[in-house]
Amino acid sequence: MRSRSTAFLVVCASLTMSLICLTVNAQSAEVAVTPPMGWNSWNHFAEKVTDADVRAAADTIVASGMRDAGYIYVNVDDSWEGDRDAQGNIHSNSKFPDMKALGDYVHSKGLKFGIYSSPGPKTCGGYEGSYGHEQQDANTYASWGVDFLKYDLCSYMDIMKLHAPQQDPQQALVLMQEAYRKMHEALLNTHRPIVYSLCQYGVGSVWEWGPQVGGNLWRTTDDIRDYYGSMALIGFSQAGLERFAGPGHWNDPDMLEIGNGGMNADQYRTQMSLWAILAAPLLAGNDLSKMDETTKSILINKEVIAVDQDKLGIQGSRIGPLQIWVKPLSDGSKAVALFNVVTDDEAEPLTLKFKDVGFTRPVHVRDLWAHKDLGLLHASYTVTVPQGGVVMLRVWQ
Ligand code: GLA
Image (cartoon, rainbow, N blue to C red):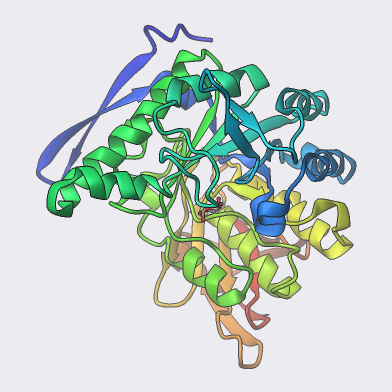
């Protein structure tokens, strides 16, 4: 590992009229070289999550083959926090008797351990946040073996209101950036590689400054919900953010809802495909211990995961007015997803013209959900896409 004291590199990029110099810490770039994959407790368990649930998730990630497919982080979201002691050290609550032991358990399975806090005095669930205890908390997390921190704005918004006169948005933004930078520096001081996940719902176009405050990923929107309208709105609204993503720093359209029951299999295949095209973090959010075979086959589609994890780290783009998306891959091929966004109608035939994704000669095509080569095709491919569903292809010359 490179020395931290010298591990700063300055990346300068000219952006419209101005020259912006981003100070990116090389430590940050060593983690999350591809979009982080794993599991997070929030979408299914919310505030009910316990130590036993997290251990069960770790067990199933291994037993189901998810770990070997790349799902490595096991992340405890909000509601683990207890009180601070007289020295100000944070303790977990009675649902989590021993965080160090939990971290050790997760590590013993060949997995990594994630945790959650807020720059404000309270988290979104009203638990103890890190405000005024940033370095102390970072040190505690490091002593528990934490490898990933989700840092959720929540009650820091009250601090911003309090300290930004007349609620000046520019000043409020600077305060927020300072709060995120402060925890980044505290994490660096622990000398432990910790993925830093910013969660402030996209406020102030976080994608433009996330790397400057040390973020490896940043939520771009409000919370996802387990129904098609929410997932589709969030996923498809990522169009235009592609230039802000790359190795070590990713747009995060929130966690997966696959297997939580509010969508059908076609719609969940849409989430998996779209998130892969977007090079988004893939954090499963279901109860893994009760996962059925369909859910497993969606989460563990290795051909789709390979698109997400491609080492070029390019976030895909939408082409044309229809929901056809394309992502260039490191072997010269392209992943192309054709989405049928009409949910109250018939399955729809959609046509992909290969020239629209940059291929002028006949192409080889593979269907990544059917796991089938479609042979050498000329000019175009027309396929019937189920309502709310997707056909995802790999195309090469
Ligand atoms: C916010 C976040 C969610 C989750 C909850 C926990 O709403 O956006 O992802 O972490 O807080 O309270």
